[in-house]
Image: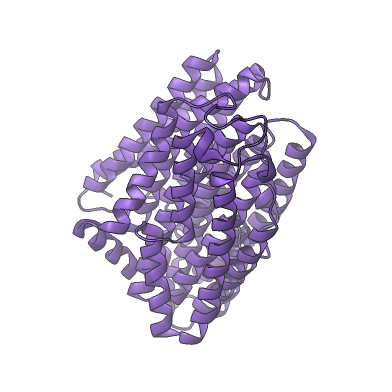
Length: 491
């Protein structure tokens, strides 16, 4: 890769590592929170500089191309806004005693280690290194899910660890099978694990080994994507961990595993004798969508509700990429970006709502547009966006996915639209109760229940919603051209 791209890629990795080391030694909340935000901002700026990298060549361990730039820029932007939200959220948790001062340095240091792991997974040019990076990101989030040290939080962390370990073990076996398929063609050693070497020689690989490898890789990394029936860790992890980590899990970590699946999908597409990965992805995507849509009606915890919404939307994204073709790939890529921006904004809202009301149970949350208008209306707009109402960007991406399905496989459009409508009904039913229901008796209309966030706390929410609205109204030609090019790479 060019020297500029290489330097920017190194910066995307180096800033979180240095920040993690500094945060591990930084006492006190205020300085640590500011350093966490500053490091996240610098990482985002380094990622933006990748857009101007010019001609790119692959390095031995790192590389930058049009596909991973999408993921890196999205990852670092949401990581930055989540750090802003985290600053106020963690202060409240510290003041109320839910997080001890002893765990504060651990939280901020792990936040940056997590960002390093996710960024490394995106820019790694070695499939073994990518696997290690995904595992690192998983382990750090496992530790952060158990941050509250309650019985429920520790149970959720252990469930996440055990199921995640099973998934990552299956992904490791699939990675080894890819190495075995490459070894007779490119030789032993490092070259048999370098992504750019693999994709250049994939046509000569044993298709039977590639087929078997992709099955293990899809199941293994699919566990991290949260696809049904491999999703059991996700609702508990969202419900019991700190809300900034819920936002990162839904908005970012699921994308890391999805990225790994897409890389190996490209590898199979380059092998004429290999099976088509599309039907497997379409099947798992549809099952996840329909299953999660119906499960939304049975949720009583607000964070679990949106955890199942994440399963639904990752199912939509995987379905779109399974369909393949320029339009479906474009729509899947757009939907992934829109989901990350919208769902993280929702969790920012949910974090404030839970702190204000003192509960995550939806029966104890109502009348938000009366008691906290700025928060209530922002939450309602965000839920309307994720439910697919126009003119938000999620509506555009879902419309493109549905139309591409009608054009290519019209019989699959019926369960797809059914899942979307069922999920829409569940989300809007819950959102209207939370936003417009009668305020609880101990929370009179017009009087905040306490802990009302300041205007600065709304900036990450409004910034995300503004981007989602802008995408629904107008996509710049440069962005459309970029996404079209990436869609072409995905086959």
